[in-house]
Every structure is written in C-alpha cells, then in structure tokens.
Amino acid sequence: MFIIHGNIKSMEGRDFGDGFVEIRDGKIAALGEMEDCPKTEGQVLDVQGSLVMPGIIEAHCHMGITEEKKGMEGDDCNENVNPITPYLRAIDAINPMDAAFKDALQAGITSAMIGPGSANVVGGQFAFVKTHGRCIDDMVVKAPAAMKAAFGENPKVNYSGQGTSPSTRMAIAALLREELTKAETYRKKREKDGEIDFRYECWLPVLRGEIPLKAHVHRADDILTAVRIAKEFHLRMTLDHCSEGHLIMEELKAAGFPAIVGPDMASRNKIEVQNMAFKTAGLLAGHGILTAITTDHPVSKIQFLPICAGLAVKSGMSPEEALRAITIHAAKICGVDDRVGSLAPGKDADIAVFTGNPTEVFTKTQYTLINGEIVYAAESGDPSL
Image (tube, rainbow, N blue to C red):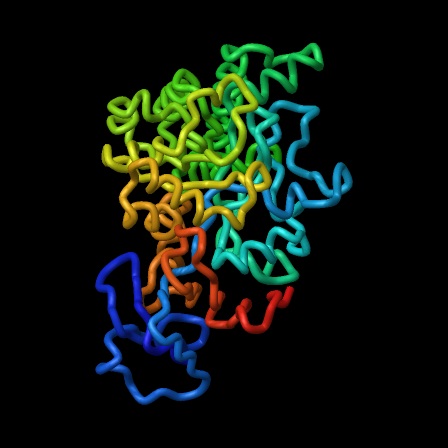
C-alpha cells in the first residue's frame, strides 16, 4: 500500500512537502519525496497535499472502562472499597465497544494509555492499546504499561467518607510507602525461593524499572511528594495531570520525570485544580521537561485531544511542540516509541491524514490507519467497529 502526494510530517527525522509512505505487512517500509517513490503496487491513496502524520496518542484516559451512556453498569474505573489494589488489570475491564473508540478513530487517534481511576492510593495496571478492534487482547501494544497511584483529593474524599484511611495526605504517602516496602521484600524473597504471590507479583515490573508508576498529581505539594517517594524507591514515574507543575518547574526539571498535562478543558471542580490552565504544558516543555497532553477521557472527550493541543499553542506552546505532545513525546512517555509516535521505517503503520493541522478546529480527518489498515475514511462515514 502507498500513500502518495502527502505533506509528510514524520515527527522525527525529515519531513517531505510532496512525499510518499510505503506500507508493507502493517509496518512503514519507506517514506520520502515523491521523486524517490518506487513503483506503486496494490492500494494507493493519493491524498493530494493533505497532512500525513503519525496517529495521535492519548497518554492517559479511561475510555472503555468508564463507558459513555451506560451509567453504573458501564463504570469499572475504580474498585473504591480498598485503597491498595495494584493487582487489578485494565485489560479485564476495557470494552472496545465503547462509543469513545469510534470518536477516537474519527479524530485520528490511533492508540491510548488506558487504566483505572484515582479513587485508590494504588489503582492497578494500565494498558497501552490501539483504538480499533473488538478483542482487547488483539489491540494491546503493552500490558502492563504502568502502575496507577493517586495523591491528593481523590483518595482523601473517597476514604474519609468510609471512616477509614486515608483521610489525609500523610496517610496516602504512608500507605504507598508501606505497599512498596512489602513489594520490595517480596521481590527479594521471590528471587531467593521462586514462590509466586499474586498479590505482589504485579509490582515486579515497577521495581525493575520496566514500567513507570503513573502518579495522579495536581497540586504542587502532591507532585513533590510523588517525586520524593519515587526517588526513595528508585522508581520510574510519570506525573499525570501535573496541574501546578508550572509553579515548581526547576524542581521538576531536576527530578527528571516526564509530565502528562490535562485535562485543561474540564471545569475546575476540585480545590486541587484551581491553578489548572492550558499554559502549563507549554511552560513545562519550554523548560526542558518531556511533556504530553491528555483529555483524561471521559473528564473531557477524547476526540478533543488535538484541540487541547491547539489551546496549549494559544497559551504559548510552540505548534511543533504541541504536535509532539500528542505523538512522539506521548509515545516516549508511555514507553512505546519503538512502535508508534512517528513515521519511520519499521514502525507500526498507524497514520492519520488531515486536511490541515489537527490542532486547528476546522481541520477534518480524512483517513485513519492502524497497522496499515484504513479504519476510518471520511467519505465512508462512520468507522467500522
């Protein structure tokens, strides 16, 4: 398959004003200027100057776990009766039939990091998945991909009402430290005698540095508590939401953890998000902090992810950095940049074709491809599910 006469934006390496992308066996085989295009065979998409770029990536959301239109029956986001539930797996709750997956495809979003919510101090394991398919097992790129932890208001509000810990930020930190200490003890015992305990086995990829702790943090003090604990236990970590990150940029740059900023399109409905603003992503990125942008779907709708990037540009982020925040930088933060996030030979052929820059509100998606298959075409109406 070939995409020809495209304005190719690779997000890494060279761009091509009048270029082609060759796809074989679901992977990108080659890309370059049209004058270097080999003889085309099979299906050919002549996009006539449209923007061709890697599929957009949502770095933090709950689609398919908190389903639209289904109320309690479709809400599997939080097991909010126990503050420590690391053994829960997103793949056991993601419903690919959720309408949000269709919306994602129509917006050129080809993959997403999906997992539990933030009611618990430890919520469970995230999965990084493609946005097209019926069987979640076939959609997985990486699972587990991260371990969810939450600081601040959400665990406090959930458990103080139950008359049990945590009802303070001190207790949140203490419970997480206790859990990590037990997990480290298990790791040493496991290496010695090989006996498996399901309750703690899920922590091994985190302790080995294979996947990050995915920390729900809004307020500056919660961000710094997460940093403190991650350093105590020598963990990789992503700072998700990071709403007051712009207030502590020097500290965050020194800490070296990436940020996933948002959902800035949502209302300031909690005390801890009073300083939430679209300027944060641009300020962090400009300070040398690896930054992605999130909708936190369904807090704000996943199809508005490119528009959130555009609003970040309006608030000072560079246009190029905004596109990176929803492609290659999101892929790097999620640990999947070997597969997705840019157009390069050998990577998955997850590609979006737009009439213009997708961060601009009037831009339309013409095609969305996943693994080299056209899963949305504007002239065909709704994508197949």
